[in-house]
Length: 128
Image 1 (cartoon, helix red, strand yellow):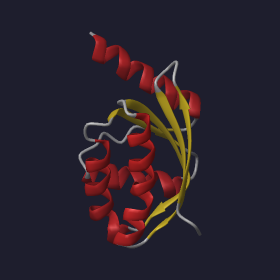
Image 2 (cartoon, helix red, strand yellow; image 1 turned 45 degrees about the vertical axis):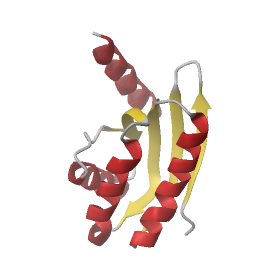
Image 3 (spheres, one colour; image 1 turned 30 degrees about the vertical axis):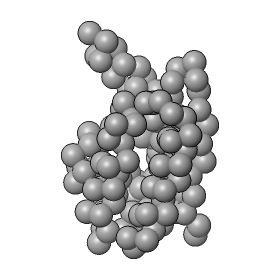
Image 4 (cartoon, helix red, strand yellow; image 1 turned 135 degrees about the horizontal axis):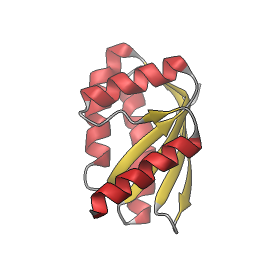
């Protein structure tokens, strides 16, 4: 399975929507995955909110620490907040585990609409 991320940016809401694809098994896989985020975020040139679909993402437990550390570095300074969604229980579990290891709140929801609502709530709290 190829490691790939599909991106769609909603400038009006400053939300980057992503669909994550692939099985992350090695440090090289982690680098390949986050390099895509790095390139896209750099191209945008501003801090954004991210809503990610994780149904097609699998992060192997043995690489969770490396993935979590790289995730933290990627979002630092570029991402205002992250909310994920998906119905695949294995994907949800692995992403929750890696988020906790990276000290990133594991905001994972059942639907895209719930994930967007979570981002809107984050925006509201930030503006208070």
